[in-house]
Length: 142
Image 1 (spheres, rainbow, N blue to C red):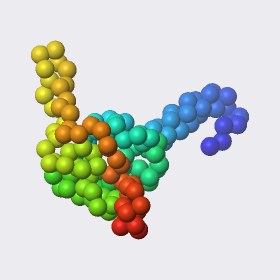
Image 2: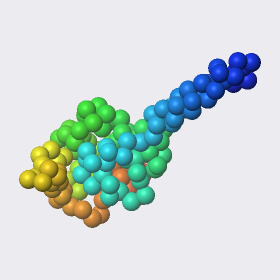
Image 3: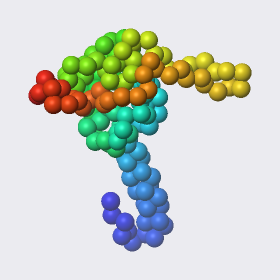
């Protein structure tokens, strides 16, 4: 992009377009924070904002859980719950506190218009479904 145009009016218009384009590109590469609400305990995985990405901050390439989540239509399904995306011997549901695969994303609102989200079966001991846990899990996945 040549911003040194001899036409000053043209160069004044180029900067906003360049800035908007850059910001849109940046936004496309960020994780979608809202997706953590689509899986049980999605916001409770310590140190990870982007469960579906290799990068803990949620940017860039997807891990296997992210690929499986996309294949499931970006929904918590029985299929996604029963999968062992990181191949560590524990299902995604076990890792995210929903071993029975019964958790549902809040869809209905209460009288005040607020969504009422039910907790999954477990809210502690949550592990990342895209990263093998422990030595045995890492060996199995390896």
